Length: 310
Image 1 (cartoon, rainbow, N blue to C red):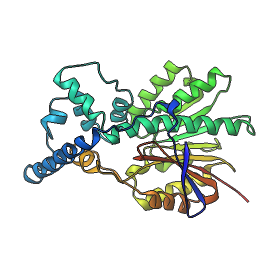
Image 2 (cartoon, rainbow, N blue to C red):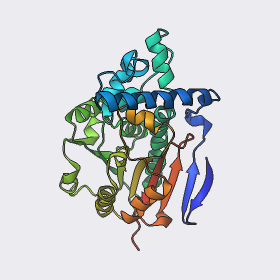
Image 3 (tube, rainbow, N blue to C red):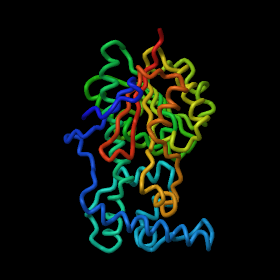
């Protein structure tokens, strides 16, 4: 990991290139793949202008020939799409379908999502270890938890060391709750988690009396406009105990965004560093208590924000 810059001389910005993490990166062939990515995005956008925005198959070379790509497109923005991406293993199918699936799983945005999962798990581990030096109990809330794969895996690691993290998973999608319950059962941490099938509007009611010292909101800011994101962070700031931690994420503008939007049917709010930090600071977290980390491709970034009370 190296420190790339400092935002306004107050917020340190890091890029995590730790080789032990097994992060995915682009190789030299990306320069030849990018024109194809952008060309297909242009072609699908043109088709949608003529035929309408909802096509059964956007292009044969993505969701036409590949069932996995079709499943990602049909479940875009949901936990199901992320579950496919997180757990995809290349090279198992040498048919045309398998080769096409492998090709698209080397998209920068796709690799960056898997990198984000690793980066969040690493950050959570360090946060918990630091808190345990002063706290006797870790209480974590995951908002829009989805499958909560990364959180569950970290909880399982700490359980093996004798630390039982208490958690609340909040998600409006009942299928996400059911899937995370299954993962928690398999990981042996289900008795440490309260699963709530609720809207984020009921956040305060849902976590009343829990007093979290960690709130995790990863993969949710990408779907909330600026003012709603700021209000959410203000609410989280009030819920956290003094010196509690918010860990959150944002996707950066990138050359592949037309493909994600048009071919993958996956619209998002792409925010540069300035806009990301604006939401964080207006949400109540002061610059000296914020750190930002990029995964190696710099498509995805996370922020670790400490609630500081003077």
